[in-house]
Length: 121
Image (cartoon, rainbow, N blue to C red; front, side, top):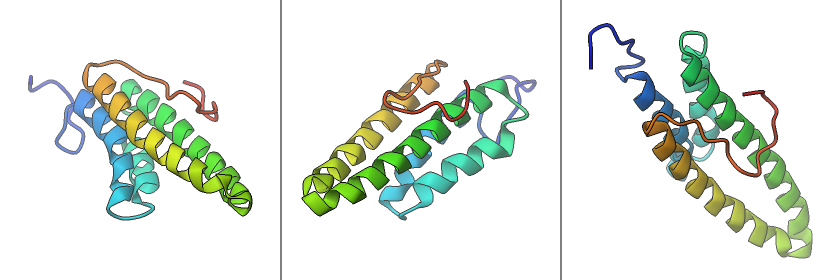
């Protein structure tokens, strides 16, 4: 790492973008943190680096989409199928976060499938 490369919270931009995606998994340990932490990481440096802004936008799009899907699943729990929906979106969140993190570590931007475009990338 060269000394001229910007550092964000001790990480180079590529590693920081990876952290944005991986931070979603923090909800496994502390419920709700997986929504707050990626947004905080994105907002903290979105104006300083275009890659961070783009990765933050696709992550925020997915998190908001996940919220919409969760509300739908909650409503559907009254006819039992919503519980299955919660399991599916939980697994998709883990899989998508890992895939996005691996791609971000390679320097690629990966738009989460099934996410609505609340923020343009």
